[in-house]
Length: 174
Ligand SMILES: CC(C)(COP(=O)(O)OP(=O)(O)OC[C@H]1O[C@@H](n2cnc3c(N)ncnc32)[C@H](O)[C@@H]1OP(=O)(O)O)[C@@H](O)C(=O)NCCC(=O)NCCS
Image (cartoon, rainbow, N blue to C red; front, side, top):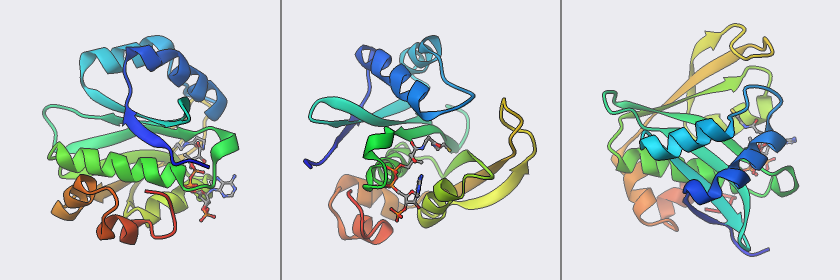
């Protein structure tokens, strides 16, 4: 398998983003209109992972102007491409982008029952800071997790194949 390319999404990618969203989530799905708003308002960075020119994953980083905390709003990888390190690689890139934008922290919400995904976040340096009862549209409980961003995250971002990056997610694609 060739290595995925992770780049910033544009309005031209919206249909593929909506498709990925539909395939990846059972509730709280982001609509085409919301994707358009997120891209056009400039208050978010959307990263798209492509393999051989086809979209296989994405992440949305919310970048508020008045806060030192950025937020990973959504992350997904097409089911056929999961468990190959692509989710971790996207997460690593999100951490780097947030650090490069000089945020001090990165937060996210995750379903409390989604232990597989929570494991990836804990490995990526996130810690649980809050329980969120009935947080999701379908009534499921959530957790808020937060990670501090450091100079090392920025340096890791600047040299993608860096030693620090490999330390963060040792066995996986970066
Ligand atoms: C969460 C998600 C982005 C991870 O993407 P990914 O490309 O599979 O991630 P990676 O390959 O980097 O990591 C795989 C790890 O995920 C975990 N995992 C995720 N789903 C799993 C599953 N169905 N079965 C087993 N392990 C799973 C495992 O811990 C695995 O670790 P391992 O390979 O060391 O065993 C992907 O599962 C996804 O799109 N899920 C649906 C959308 C979603 O729930 N997003 C999170 C919102 S908070």
